[in-house]
Image (tube, rainbow, N blue to C red; front, side, top):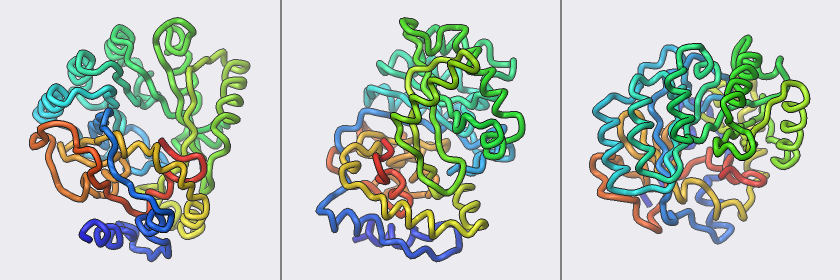
Length: 330
């Protein structure tokens, strides 16, 4: 009952605008579904909201003026948690995680603790000429790079992410290719993330990946391993943009109308635990943005003995419709 009330109370979180959306938990119930945890195998670490960009689609409101950055002591607690829990995948994100002064130590400590370590860098920071040691650290430890590259259209990307970001991102991808990332047989995995530049849903992932692969290779000689095509989550700066342009209700209606019950089983929140820059735990990075603690309880990483319990409840709200729209968001 507490979690259902929590969802209802948070439907309008931070926007100040009433949105007539059926609560996500009600939609699940209507389809005879429950959103509970499976076995948790991924630890996602959000090292902070500091970023050199103010992207329009950002669900975290990350930017140059954000002060939230994971301190050294919290990083020690996260490392200890990873040691006692033994995850299959460590997923390091931000903001721009490269701007955390402890990022190299975190990566070095995490590499022996999981078969797969991922970094979600900001390409404009990674390629700023100051990260050679970090880049070599990623290469030598075969850290998977997951880079945001929302559009093949220069004007669209620059309008979403900032002037000049498209060309900077192209140059960064070329540099990664040059040291082996994305190349066949290198063992250095380079994945791209694409998302729409407006209030609409993405096209087919298979079609988008084929198009990105063909155009990036033909125009710039860029290769990559996989492309993930995601819908924008109506939180943070993107939610504010939806409100100011009068698109919030229309976008929520699209997400609701595109609900796919088959996507629920593979949702990332069922197998992931997300730790924020201050050490508190969430079911996913979107709940982190919304302030919905893991399972509806405020728990610090230092308090967790191990993995979250299987079948434990997952906190939900209206933004969860993003992850179940169409083919889903896993």
